Figure 1 (tube, rainbow, N blue to C red):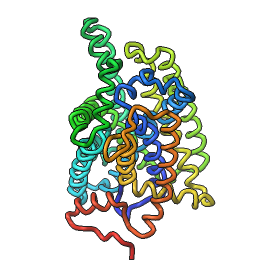
Figure 2: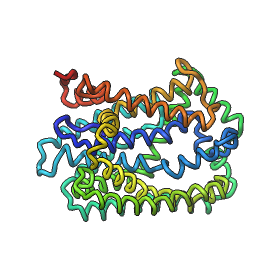
Figure 3: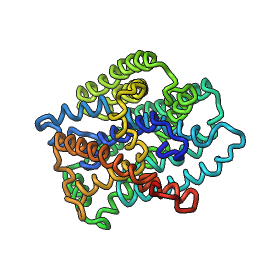
Length: 402
């Protein structure tokens, strides 16, 4: 989950959560630095063909796209079991719903006031549903989770089928708006984002609403399904170092190899079809399904490293970043808005090269790994974790360490 109760922490969960929040930034920084059309179809962006632009995009697509958000979703499900427990009725059931309510509020504020690409709102909605599965057996969680993930995949396939059989004129007009808008439309969007807050609100608010609709309709089954996978893996001891080092390494390496095959195929295929939306079905399906073993492989190898006692000093900054995942996630958005949007930002959206995006991402990673342990050396929670917890309990929580 984003932030569990102070007394119920596992360092391994925090480490993996810290890795996940860093990995998510690799994709989010592209979405913040470019207009929506460039993110959906990078071939529209002249920077894509300059220097290492194409290679950096390919690395992000193969090794980051869908992988770390999948880990984050699985940890969210694991966190629900950890916090609410499997009792019936659980004394923490009402507390969980209050937490989800305030997460929904924080996510909505984030989406409409800071950056439209918010995941907190769909997570809060999914959390209201998936908590009902916390007492299910491991096998049931895997079966239902797989069905839900497959359902979302079928919805994607159905969408492509509908596009192919739509009247050509109507289809071309719709695809042009989404994947190949005219240069003047892109220029107008960039100009809007370079304006002040109120000037860009007519552009950002509809994008936030559209993103939330996509998350709530097309990706909700996947989110809930992956959260169920996370619940099952938590019950199996995967996230709490209950497996042997060798088991983590062998299964992690095998899953990583399988996931890489699907993820790399997806990236190569997108290059091959030149991001033609009518020819992307195979690539998108490969990326969708490949991300699951890919994310599991990453997670298993992180768990393997977490079992090695001599890596304690290296693990500590990642664990601190994970304990402050909500704060770090929101601060990444604030930094991105300042760097790329208009006043009080630097208005650089649409002009930043892919190498510069990568260097900015690396600098933010380093900052997170430095400031998180420094903050937690003095305080019990990150700033937004404290706010979320205080709102949930409707009482200011003790912040400073004794």
